[in-house]
Picture 1 (cartoon, rainbow, N blue to C red):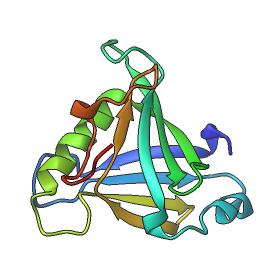
Picture 2: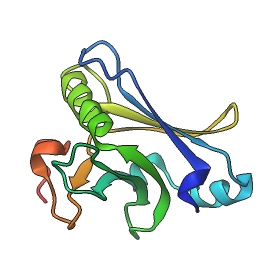
Picture 3: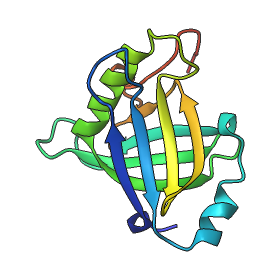
Length: 145
């Protein structure tokens, strides 16, 4: 699917243990295309961020992706500002100390309808050359990469 079908909103990024940060993706493309891709269980998706620019660039940006954990197939990709992703990671780290299933929520909507919601603990961040940036990633304890 085309990236321009998706609009990314990041909510509740204040570093507070009270509000769970949310990755809200609004889809405005053909509904049947999205439904075909969202037949996965919430535990079967991973969320990653890949820089398209050098990490230290003033206007660093990249692509947030939701993928099928088993096949690696993309469910969706959307453009995202790197600074906002760093804010998400910081807020999720703070929230992870609270009693919750995940440290951030992923919500995909089509119009006014919520079509997919899950809570996640992991978000892997990669530089523009494909190397994992552990210091910028959310990696739960006990997970070995």
